[in-house]
Image (cartoon, rainbow, N blue to C red; front, side, top):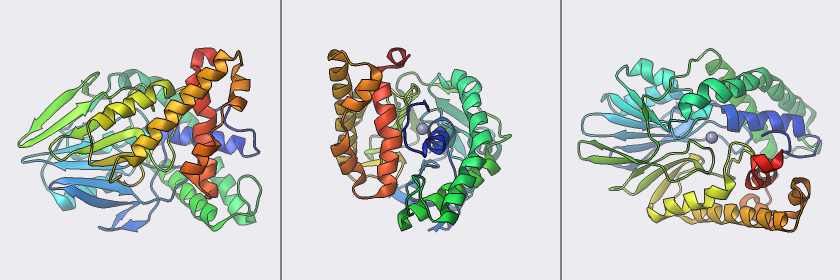
Length: 367
Ligand SMILES: [Zn+2]
């Protein structure tokens, strides 16, 4: 997934941090947000429904959002980020009811590495995820995590050096936005290195290959398989009474996280259409603020449809992958997602342009 990211001088670092976000996951900076939990703030979306939303600025390292669903007698949690120790402490200030189920929306570390902490805190807890996690985590996931643990400190040191020299990763004078972003990335790497090495995988007890309904007292919680997109293992959690959707990384703000080999760009827009068909009032994305309407979801859907269309066009014209990369033009989309922000432009190039075309082309075709 890392080999065709970008031909600029930042490529080795970009490759490493893409691993961070797509294969392992990043972590928690200590930034206070009410009610005083580090790196995230709690937003109450409906009675008993609380989102823990990350407060980090956009950057190359991330930790995931988390959702607490407090029911009549228990709690259901969506995702287990690297900051799970802090999230458990935050939940305990809200309720003393036990957590009985935790749903991992997909297999990346920033959504699963906290499983061990949640199980230690709530021994009766059961984990629900797509069945593919049981193969991925001990195999490709373990390899990617080892690569991240080996490479992340060096990547953070390189970013620190850029900060010290007043230059961005492309060697240009650094902007204030880039400074804030790099500092956050460095803190997230430090937290990652504190939490992840040595933490055991806790695999799902219940595999959901299709839809699954949990009735917890008065609350109906639907675990849905909308389709693939970000990974093979994508699940979402839907609260039909509240019309709240926890999308996992099928929806990520400010730019989607695409893996050239792990993602399924040609399926992604249909999966987002399946989410739009639910008519959600609010969407808790895997990363980024709670979306108060469907506009961003539609924008993502249209982006992926366009990448698929342009890539298929290039193939029909007889181009190979290298030529297709040049032929597919996503500049309008980049402006729409990133505006004038240097950080978001860099993210769009890294996480969308290169891996997006590769994914749409197909892994077999790329060989
Ligand atoms: Zn992910």
